[in-house]
Amino acid sequence: MLASSIMGRHLYSVILILCLPLLIGHVVRKYRREKSDPMVRHRLGLELPMVRSDTLWIHACSLGECKVGLALARMLMTQDPSLKILITATTPSGLNVLSDSEFESHVFPWDFPWIWSQWLRRLTPRALIVIETELWPNLVAACHESGVPVILANGRLSDRSVRGYLSFGGLTRPMWSKVSRALMQFPGDARHAQLLGVPAHAISEVGSIKLDQPVPPIPEEQSHQVMTWKNKRPLVCLMSSHPEDDALFMRWARQEPHMALLIVPRHPVRGADIRDAATAAGLNACQMSLKLDPGTQLLIGDTFGHMGAYISQSDVIVIGGSFSGKGGQNPIEPARLKKPLVAGPSMYNFQAITDGLETAGGMYRADEENLSEVLAKAMENAELMGSAAEAWVETHRGSTALQT
Figure 1 (tube, one colour):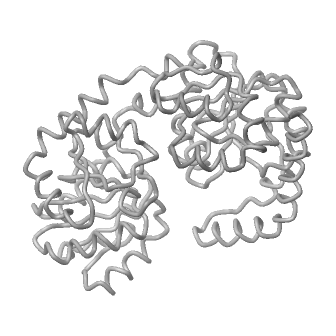
Figure 2 (figure 1 turned 120 degrees about the vertical axis):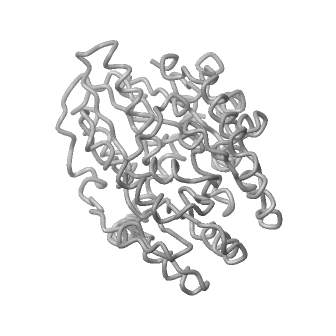
């Protein structure tokens, strides 16, 4: 078993090395397109964190996970103000929110084994806390060999991700078996963790830290701008959208000319592309990052930090990624603001939360065929749905304290 585990990890490392030119090319193209620094030197492990020795290391991936990591770090600091905490992230959106925080942050490098020996010598971490699912075989092996506990916090494992891990069981099962503690969100996540190889005694069910996040701030200036733009029209907000979501809702908007549509892309850099797609679809559109035109039916929310303004001025919130097979985005922020929620068929990223909100009456599910009908029903029942969504979140708060 040990020999096959080592062989599997060596093969994984060789494949990773062979794919290095592709990795570099991918991040350079992707981040230049998004007007971000690809930070290749950091991803190759050539730049080490500034913080040294006896560090608590928290790793998150993108924006949502980084918000969870920050909440966890702040709770831990209240318990021990002397802690030295490093938070790493992978994406520009995650790194941006970390750079504005009080904690040391750094780009998470690729999973080459020689990188981790340098990192662990520099950090000598008390523990590595990984947010949700960001485990990597060489990193976990290096921590295990160095006696560094690996803790999975706010753990989340969808059916889809479990199938992916099981298909590479020779590589991933040894990795999961080395997890010291797995603090999983819901019963299904806990079952999945054990199925993947986490020892049963290491698994706890503790809820989701995302349910503890504060009500998003509402920037007054941007909120007023959206209110002026919509001009008393009913407003549907497609939040954290993907291109396939955009296309569906543009078709819907063409059939509902009396309604206003606000598309907030998951990646704001897509703003101009969405506007071009709207023009091709026969919709008049404007971008929040440019000049607002009250005569348009579609507003593209392509700015950072204004989600609270977008949500607060909307009558119904549609969860992006749920109509495009992407597993859906986080529905908690609009629920905290007492907004009625509509989601498509694909919500596997937040399945337990979705089930809870739907059962409580705070969320309706829709597909392409009944979309207009479901949106109209949500408009009619907006107040009841919004109150139900907020109440469900409120009754499931408290996970942060359980995970510290």
